[in-house]
Length: 358
Image 1 (cartoon, rainbow, N blue to C red):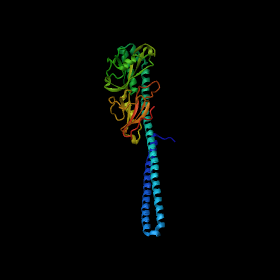
Image 2: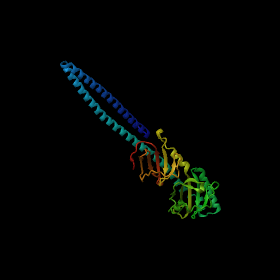
Image 3: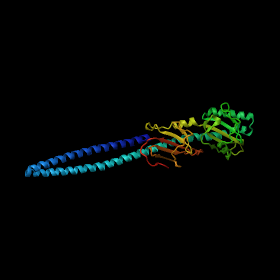
């Protein structure tokens, strides 16, 4: 029978609850025993006083009273020892349950962080395939080879058809070697033809690619020519004859509409009822927040917690906040950009050192 992370944590919470109940019951019963022995001591003392008044006739009763008092002392000592030893064992059991619950919860949060970054990796892998495929389109190659009005218009029409089918893109741009946009798929919405993108980091990197099989994936950025939208840009070379090793004629850039796609991923992470206030994040290699389930700090906030290059792990910070993280594993030919999936959950409990790191 399989057990989910939530069920495991719930079971450990149940053990902890019952341990605390057992400790309370032990303290109650030990208290009752000590109360009885106290009464026995008082009775034995009263009996000794009465035996002394009776003189020789009360000597036998005095001996019995002394024995009762001695037994009371022994029972009291036993009760104190039971309280100390059994109470200590129960406290250790409760501590172990707390540690196990925290470990199970931390491991679950790491898995959720991995799930988030894996989903975006698979999505972006498809983008890397798209850009390399569309760069071999005959209309795109023809426009890059002979960038006149007719070929560029025809290429724009082809790019527009692609955009109607692939709604995750804001626009597709064909760019000459100087960095000038010569054709695009949404010229009516974004009039980018003739604009220069020569200073964009992704353009300069794409120009240096060795073959049409290679691509460049840029970190999420705001693109002014697309109305200030957040985009993840993928670029590759358009080559003569559509051959991977033909002469480079220009660059094809595809702009992934980042914000709605990323929001869907971080908001779809399946948190439990008691985890509803946790923050699901995607961060880039510089710890900049690029997606957040609460919509805050995107492209402006830098996560204070530093994973320090670890692939995965979790840590309870001094203020009780739990931070769980997992680095991008990449997918197929998309190696990832050093991003992390992160879960931040406030007020999980007592502070503790980092655990579960790899």
